[in-house]
Image (cartoon, rainbow, N blue to C red; front, side, top):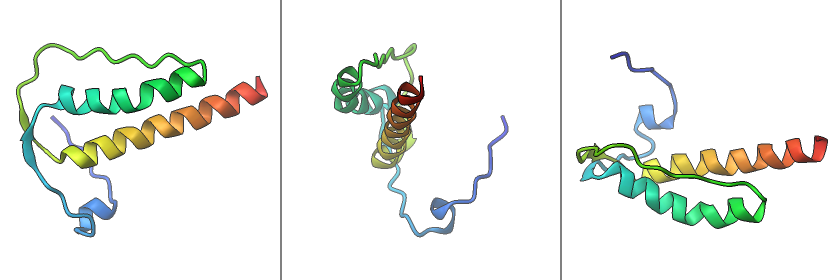
Length: 86
């Protein structure tokens, strides 16, 4: 498996990582619950279908939620821009 080397503040230690054993589907389910209503309000369906059982592993719960939330926020902004141009 190849890992993409992306240089960002996380690489340089300016953002501390807090790795704990966690269940990624549960982490992402919380993000889904936070965003589903906002997507519905824009007439966009946000679907979350967890995959097969994934064993718990160590990751930074808060950082994963922050990154996914940023991606979802950006997607709503792009959707709004495309809808205005449409």
